[in-house]
Amino acid sequence: MSRFVFTSESVTEGHPDKLCDQISDSILDALLAEDPNSRVACETVVNTGLCLITGEITSKAKVDFIKVVREVISDIGYTGARAGGFDANSCAVLVALDQQSEDIAQGVDEADDHSGDPLDKVGAGDQGIMFGYACNETPELMPLPISLAHRLSRRLANVRHKGTLKYLLPDGKTQVSVVYENDKPIAIDTILISTQHTADIEGLTNEEELRDRITQDLWEHVVIPATSDLVLKPSKEQTRFLVNPTGKFVVGGPQGDAGLTGRKIIVDTYGGYARHGGGAFSGKDPTKVDRSAAYASRFVSKCLVAAELAERVEVQISYAIGVSKPVSILVETFGTGKYSNNDLTELVKSHFDLRPGAIINQFALTQLPKQRGGRFYRDTAAYGHFGRPDLDLPWENVTEKVKELIKFQPS
Image 1 (cartoon, rainbow, N blue to C red):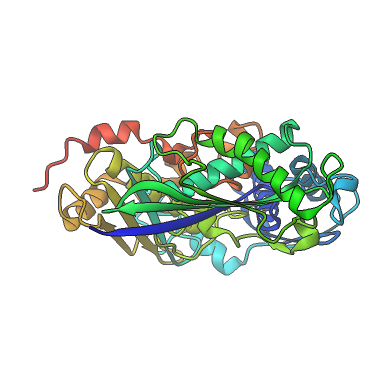
Image 2: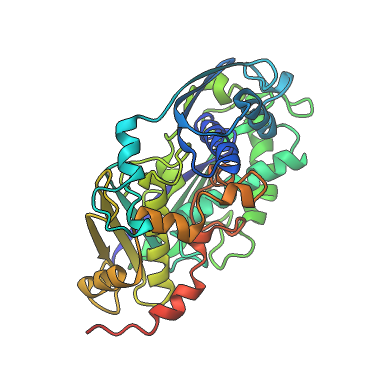
């Protein structure tokens, strides 16, 4: 019998790195909503009183970048005196954007290996490796630790926005440790929540009293509601609950730490439970396979698990810049597959079109911002890109494909 504890973390929308991801993806949304052919690689940096957007953008869209930036910062909650040293209305916003390199553009516009098929003509925007993963631990087919961590982060932001806990401020992190036996989750060992808060709470200023009050409130208003529908629930008797272990968390957000786009790639994906190719998502248009192929590999993995061809699936896809067809495809089921890894790899090659152009078309990746009223990618930029029951994500909708796959028999 094998027994181990696995831990994953999440962060709230007000974390400095996540703030940057949302700004970058809001700019992407604005550009694609007006010009679906926009090429975007937008990076954001924040620090006390400062936001810098930089990168490469080629687009016919006319976007007020400064307005977009300030709206995102305001929506998250960094306004007024409670914002500390980072206020949406007064922070400096610097714009330093160039156009996409012609050398990169020519390989994306016309793939080196195309044969006249329009979908063959779209080359990968860069070389790289992407991983997708799915397992049967949760209804959304995600690993339980990251699923729980995101639930807690979303709920933490929810009670702040609703004013349930008026002393909460935007920055926060969650972490969940789950006990496994024979690769199955059996208990929630530890929950850690670090949340930014005001210096006093209804007259309380003593550090120990503040932490006791926050601990009590978070258990009642965050932990219990966020896990109420689960079979495996935390309990005060069996689950260690840690809150703001340093004692207090008053200075936070960009005033406490600088933020940068793309620094939460494990939070964005599977919480460390599966491998990661290294490429971030936010601020990148769908010709960048870092993003689009990661979505496709999640779709493939989820299809295989939903079709009960395996209990756990990891899919690796690799690309060469300017080439449409993947360099390699690999399926790994960790011994849980109904068929061999080789058979399932051949199944993927024959049933899924993983050329960048085909992925973009299948999921409407360049059209979604316009279809969703100008906001799509921003909503993926906090609380994970996968297994999101609160969002309608095309790469999570596997129903029709599963009907096709359940008929599979290896030759």
